[in-house]
Each structure stands twice: as C-alpha cells, then as structure tokens.
Image 1: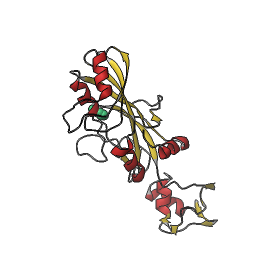
Image 2: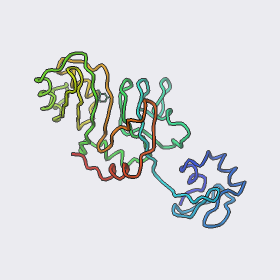
Image 3: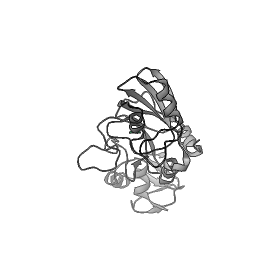
Length: 235
Ligand code: URA
C-alpha cells in the first residue's frame, strides 16, 4: 500500500502541493471514485486516473545521463553540482547514481532508485563490462596494449583483471574493464607510463550511451533497456 500523493509524485504528475491542488479540483480518481484525500492509502495496482487518463505505477525509475565534466557523481555536495542536480523536472527522491565517474570524466551514468539492481551491477562478482573512450597524452605501443589486456600492477594487492583494448588512433583507445577500482582507467594508463587527457564512458554492461545525448542531457531508459539490465549477468 502506498499514499496516493506519493504514488502520483513517483509518476512525476506533480509536486506534493500540485497534487493536493489536482485532488481539490477533482482531477484524480481511484478505482472509479473521485479522490479527496492526498494521504489515502492505495494498492500499487489500483486503477488511478489523472484528467481521465489511466496511470500505470512504476516503483522504480531509471535514467541514462551523459555526465558532463565538472559534475560530481554524488547525491549531495556542498560545493559542486551533482549528477542529481542535473535532473530537472523529474522526481529525484531516493535516486542515486549507479557507481561513480570522476569529476573530470564524461559519459554514461545510470541514475535510479532501484537499490537492488544497483547493488547487483556494482558487485565485484558481477564483472560488468564498462567501456571507456580514452584520449592519451602519448602514443600507445603494442606492448602497452598487451600489458593492459593481460592485467597491470596499479599498486593494489592484485593486478587488474584482463581488459580489452581497441586502438582507434595512435593516442586514442577504447578500453573495456570489468572492475571498478578507484581511478582505475587513469591508473592503468599511468602504469604503462602514459596519461589520460580525456575520459568518457560509452557503455555500461548491455547499455550504450545514447549518441543523441549531449553532455548534461538525460533520458528515461526504455522498457527494453530495463529488461536488458535486469537480465544482465556480467561476463
Ligand atoms: N576510471 C577512471 O580513472 N575514472 C573514471 O571516472 C572511471 C574509470
């Protein structure tokens, strides 16, 4: 059971105050009856309408953000803009980013309120493939590529798991990793005496960054993307 105003807020119908107003104006029905109490408790599969249109309740919300540089992957920050601050006109209550990208990294970040999915995707056991476009300060050699692919010592207890590298220019690669260690891509490139000058995540598990999203833009995941994420088992 859920409060009617929470149900409507979760669907982005309006703020709590706007919803009160809609109820006062008799714009909401529950199971065929005009609702009069924003706090009434209803079941998630009740037949609810707004201005005559039937609503379908979604407990979980999933968005794809093309994170821009200069924004932190947090829900709150006293100094910097957070990825949650970027989501305008949607109900961001209980939403958080699935993992982190560094402040100066761009690219695909999932933002959701689905803790169970996030936990599964971030678990080290899941080995979710994350692909990054990496621009380098120096040209990369075939020996460097071999080293990165086999696993490299970045100063942790263990070397990194095998990665995939696709060179697209002498100083640009796609690097796919299955772990999420702190500053992992930057440290892997430092381990082969190079330096990352631009970093963008282009895919996360089965999801690819939507090329129509400019940095700072976002969109809701569609049903097939949510199903893919739910079914994804890592590699
Ligand atoms: N690796 C990094 O070094 N930074 C990121 O933001 C993501 C992966």
